[in-house]
Length: 117
Image (cartoon, rainbow, N blue to C red; front, side):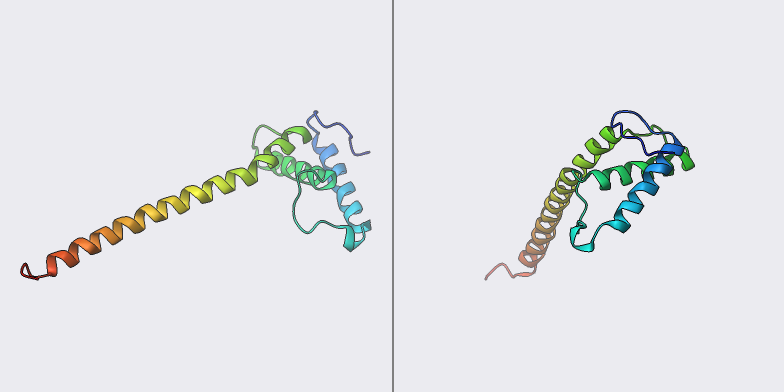
């Protein structure tokens, strides 16, 4: 079975296996100095691999809906901004909590001080 070249159709399990196999073969043949060190949603080989692998996993576990290459690329493009936003929210909440702790400590210290000083 030949790996499909479409970007907007959802691949069958057989097509996903062919794509996964093709991607692994291409990765093995690619010289190490040409392999990307980190994931890039604009790397065609990486996105075909991710789409095929995620659709096969979804199929095994009955997760719907399966994604086309185009949809998977859109989802992958939103992951980094979503992580950055989540990290910013968590950092902000940590600061709010730190202020609450410091305020409580200040109140306790003020209660300990005698009135005359």
